[in-house]
Each structure stands twice: as structure tokens, then as C-alpha cells.
Image (cartoon, rainbow, N blue to C red; front, side, top):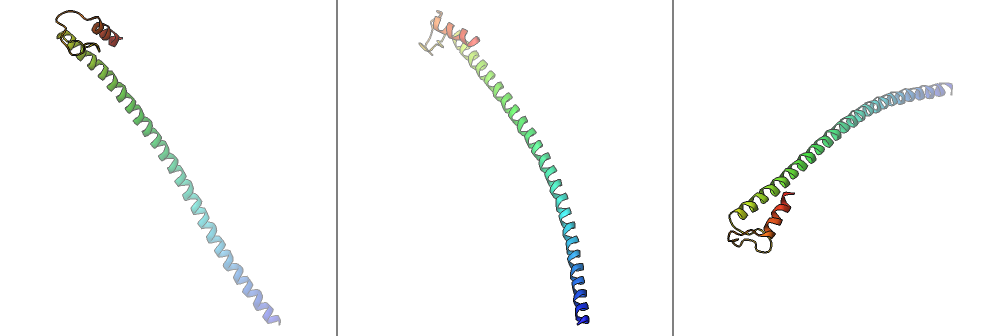
Length: 117
């Protein structure tokens, strides 16, 4: 019985050593996973910052383009209407497109002056 008990203790010791080796391997694996997770979080944060910067730039460019188009549209449209008026056509809503016959139209002048402001 003493020999059997001693063999049991030796087997138990081998199992403990094996479990300890498995535990060390698991600790190393967890340490690697934690490092990779931190690196991925840093990269993710960096990419989010870059994406936010790009998005802000795109919004600013779009806003500037819209403002420029609005200014051009109003300016060009007004210039075209003023040119039509100088060519002798009505640009007011009352007589739009009809010939002025060289007389000034208060509606047209009022409309063109409103566009200047």
C-alpha cells in the first residue's frame, strides 16, 4: 500500500507540472492577446481621427463650393437680367420678356435694384 500511495503522489505531481505548463502557456497567450488588443485600439483611434479630419475637410470644401456656386449663380443671373434690360426687354414679373420700347420700367428697375443688395 505504501508503494501504491507513493505512485499516486508521483502521478499527482506530474499532473500538477503539466497543469502548470498549460497555465504558463495560457498566461503567455493572454499577454500576447492583450498587447495585440492595445495595438489595435491605438490603430483604430488613429484611423477614427484621420476619418474625422477627412470628413471635416470634405464638409468644409463642400460648404465653400456651395457658397461659391451660390455667389456665382446670383451674380451671373443678375448680370444676365441687367444685360437683357439694357437690350430693351422687361425683366420684371409683370412684363417679363416683352420689349420695353426704350422706356424705363419701374418694376424692372426695382427688381434689379433689389438684386444688387
